[in-house]
Amino acid sequence: HGGILPPRHIIRIYQWMTQIQKSNSELVTQHYLGKTTENRTMYYLQISQPSDKIKKIIWMDCGIHAREWISPAFCQWFVKEILQNYRSDPKIRRFLQNLDLYILPVLNIDGYIYSWEKDRLWRKNRSPHMNGTCYGTDLNRNFNSSWGSIGVSYNCSSEIFCGSGPESEPETRAVAQFIKKKKSDILCYLTIHSYGQYILTPYGSTTRPPNKNFGPLKITAKCTGTDDNIIPVLNIQMHVAEMAAAALMGKYGTSYKVGPTSLILYSNSGSSRDWAHMIGIPFSYTFELRDKGTHGFVLPPDQIQPTCEETMLAVTTIIDYVDQKYFPGGAVMLTASSLGLSLCLSVVLTWTVS
Amino acid sequence: QTYRPSAEPASVRSHPGRSPPLSTMQGLSAAPPAAFLLLLLSALLSPAAAAPGAERELNPSGRLAAGAARVALHYLNFQAGSPGALKELGQVRKYYLQFTTEDYKNGENAGSCLATVLYRRTKFPPVVNIKCMHTKDQKQIQEEDNRLYQKIRHQTKPITGNNIPDSYGHIEPALEPAWALAVAGSSYIMWEKSTESLGYFLAQVKSVKQWVNDFIEFDYTVLLHEIPTQEIISCHMRLTWLPGHPLKVKYFCASENQGLEDGSGMESGSAAGILHGKGANF
Image (cartoon, rainbow over all chains, first blue to last red; front, side, top):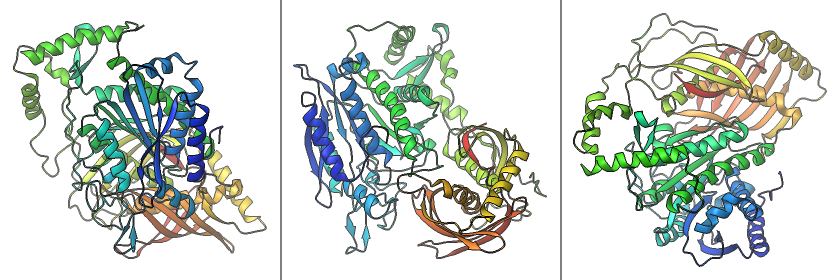
């Protein structure tokens, strides 16, 4: 499986987390997040460079849908890569000075185990309904973001059953409570799925673009084009996602589509990504990894490593951007695009003031 | 493989469903605040409501275009003949598409296609008209098919298998031909079942069993992944293959809500000519 720990049973994942913490104890700590429906413990890994600086947070979760096995594989790969390269890679060193990485390798542990032992194409968690005659809530329809409004079913037998209410599931509550607690420090929320090759931005439940002002800069537009012909574009989230997709494509030529879920995929409500953005986290993305349907959920083993490698580039592009935006200064190169951006900033400020 | 319906329905293009390019804002620098400007522009440039039969321009990255292109490809992979004359019009939704394709096996560029997809009411398959530029030599494809056919005919044991690919995404080399035929046959099922709101992918071949007789005939259980419901639909498929002849597919799909759906058809198919959509663009 290309050098990464094959995602066998969940016990191996627990063992891997313990071992990772042991052999990198200066950087990694394992933390309790909550319990699943079947009373299994959810842990997240915190990658944090020791320092007296106050850091901001990047959150990434994998495995919210049981059958999307490439997703937990990527979280493992990501942690391995960071720990392997943080001493030698200047980009990683730079962002670890300012950012802590919080990684939840398998969010839906019960469902994941069920997909290994009983039903490879299981999607939901394992909460019992109707006196145990029907199982599972779609955790990515269970968050409190326009919950139950569109793209869901109220019937337990459906794969997109949104649960008995928003945050009805212990897994959802565990994640939501933690993120709510830390939300003033979380700059970026990433959630990893498969398949389809997309980087999805909010929202699923409406086609109205997200329109938030964040941080001290209050940027509401980015500019493209030359100085004579500045074309304002609303939505920095899209711009960053497009950069990430371009970086990903640079590795093996894999092409990803970028955009709001409601426009390029289908309408849905109650997703974790939408909820994270609604409570104020500025950069919130869903990744749908390889492939585009040829193998779908059962991706061939020889594609695991290339998928992880290319996705790594996309994720680090986003982290880099967030790092440079919120922690400018230090050895920052003034590139043409950043010059253009600062020119454009003055234009935007004039508009909103007038 | 081209088909012209005998009666052209009222053709439908598309309206700009998205907000207009903001470069049109350039001339309005001395104007009121940005938010009001945007509101004004979107009122001017997008039509109030799309009347039925109105022309609309589609976002090529959008789900409707992708869905229609997928349907066209199901149809192509199955290489259907004439789907029959159009009868009911009702709400006519016709898509004009151009897209590139890749080889199913190795992902190499396999040429581009022009297609039209016409969705009709449920219980009627979409009408597809598709023409492709092939990069792979058609004679080469025929020869590959014939070689494969002979190979299967002269096997000592009939082909049987379960879970193709297996849980880890692996396909036994000996089962690859059975998988390729399953893709071709499933494409027929997926084409027939597709609507403007429901799309399909082949998730896994649950089982395959070869019939021992004078033909190459397989019984399959295939699992289809339905979008956006996320359901896994189990279909039983009987497939008969003779290169250069119409592919024979009979199927029924188990469905919790609707009971059993029956379907069958005689269409031509090729194992070596399977294409996979790369991306839709206008």
